[in-house]
Length: 500
Ligand code: GLN
Image (cartoon, rainbow, N blue to C red; front, side, top):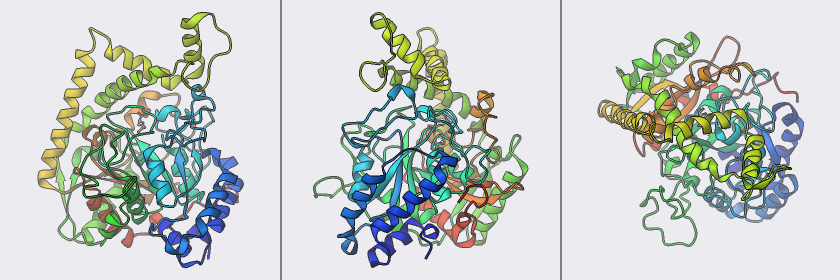
């Protein structure tokens, strides 16, 4: 049996049956990282020894494990705090910062028997759509090493696609799980805002940030989301009631809730196709692949109906004002005093701040801080920030209206497949524009998912996005599951690109 070919759930089942040991699984993943990650640069930190120790400790409990993901090796985006393990946000300014605590999701994963391989490369502070703005160098796409893996969770998408671990946990502020999933041919979901605790997720834009999984398929996503979701008092935006009735100690981990809903039966499901998402600027092969996905869903009994969504055009400007404004405030804490790295030479406190921030942040992060500070400054606040919040409400309203007519929306994830390395860095505005299809779900706080739906003429993966209404994760995942029962795009693995 080739371990690499198993999904996370299949590997978990094999571990439980005693066909594979937790140590064998961890070693296989560490060997794959050793062989391939020089080329991909998907990891910032690989925890080798620590990973093996954890796997050894878990072996004894494998047969009695309740969690379907027990003993399965995985990796965590480097903006999620891990106790005693460097957490850098791919920024120079955090230096070798090792948090004194675990993020809520890391605690929950530990309870579910996850074996972490280490921390994943990303765009600096999750700002970007290509994973090129990392202080640790760009991540490469395993389907073509001259192309980007998408961003900002590019390390996670590249690692899962190349078989360096069975799933990844990333974050999505404006598309950072879905778009890299699409560029790398994996399945990723951003859940409803407030369903996964942000405690220990280093903030970019707090009102938009959500943690979620990147996996081989929808079933794995359901299993990981079952672990991640739940109420947490330490996050004031965490939704109460998610764990109602839970009387145990520690976080409740609800194995199998979403997983049990994956029947693959989507008869009568109403899927809206927003015409505005298929207009100018969309690559022809991407359009055909997403429309073909609609046909497949239709063949399984879903009803497909066109729908207007004119609010789409407001998403990019509103998002980039709100995200930059929140980022400028969130990133003010990096001053060379509290965390991580500090400039070498300075005179007085003001210069310490200035030099640390000047040398510690990269160009894209500075651009956002400048933009956000401007949008929040007195005299401009109403014209930009307040206006953007009003537009956000308009977008939420547009979704509410759409969901009176359908259960899910089907759109492209990105206007085209993965661009060449370097292309986007020279043209940030067109990079921002390429986020158009993913941003609306964040502005409205809705769940949205990316699933592989084809390949372009160059052999690069194409993704389709499904957006659901609040708490519609189960419906989304079941639709993707039905699609994946009919197709094998999610099963294909990159060859050629990665040296064995
Ligand atoms: N590309 C978007 C941005 O740069 C989204 C990033 C994200 O979701 N973290 O803001």
